Amino acid sequence: MGHAALMATKTIGLAAAVIAAANREKPADQVLRDRLKSEGHLTRFESREVSAIVFAYYRWRGWLDETTPVAEQIALARELNRRFSRDPGSFPPEELLARAAPAWTLGALEVTPGWAAALQAEPRLWLRARPGTGPALARHLGDCRAFGDGPLADSLDYMGREDLFRTSEFHAGEFEVQDLASQAVSWVCAPKPGETWWDACAGEGGKTLHLSDLMENKGLIWATDRAAWRLEKLRRRAGRAKVFNYRVAAWDGGDKLPTATRFDGVLVDGPCTGTGTWQRNPHARWTTTPGDVAELASAQAALLTRASGAVKPGGRLIYSVCTLTRAETSAVAAAFDQAAPGFKRLPCPNPLAPAAPAGTELFLRPEDYRANGMFVAVWQRE
Image 1: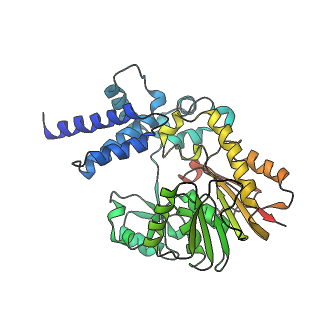
Image 2: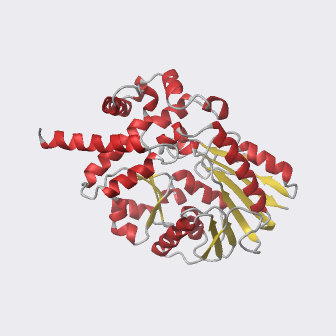
Image 3: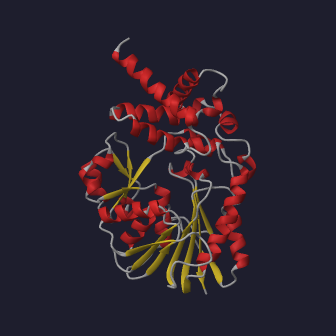
């Protein structure tokens, strides 16, 4: 057996092991990271191949017969992936609608042929350059395309094959890997230098760092999360990006807020089912259930209500989730309208389409921007 055949057998075997181990409790991306880390002798090419096989399998799972050997399923998934890349129009819309996502989504969100096709496309890798540096960074990295002009020139669609985390530009804090829709949330927040903000569900800090850039590293941002390990990652990222105007604190989402401070702005980027990320995380399509939607919608409503108490008079409250289900988006916002009479809904502009009129809520859909799906709503405390 030649070297190429041996390598193909090896990568397919590793991918099959990841697929066999992944389940609802152990997501495929987590199993994949752990397996690649344990296989320390893999080349970067081999690691990329294993990852590509695993994600192609789950992207095209709706077309596969799970009673056949997994190697046959993998071969078919890879062929479908290649065919879609060459000629997406060869897949009829009705086929995509029937196979790309589970049937329960038809009643839970707006399912269109464009959305189904977007789920099957390879996800884009979006970078966020420091303010005003996008064109220069694009020249240095190469293989980059800016999303637009002005501030949007700092949002770069990276199409190269370089491991960006090894670049000197990354280690110098010149850019973050951050999805375009996530960047849009911070632009909707539009914090000003010197203000005080709370990123209530900060996670690993992507939006915290963007808020700081928009504030010119002035003022103060409280960043909270229930997971200490996420906050530790936030600290490391902030150090690399030379962000200093922040504090971190644990908050489990309960009635006791992490500080008595009243804020100019509060961002609740709530935990959600992540249906807006299914093109990037295809395994989640097949593990998410309607019960998850209902459970998370209830948690989101509670988080929004509790965090709203920290908004000062005249301050703003922003609710965002990277999902598109009605229960987690418009329904949560409408329930808050009824439960919090001291807040009024504000127009929510679309930073990715500055000329478009602002509605009372913003849906960013994957088929429109080749980015994650996102929902945003904004209120002001009267």
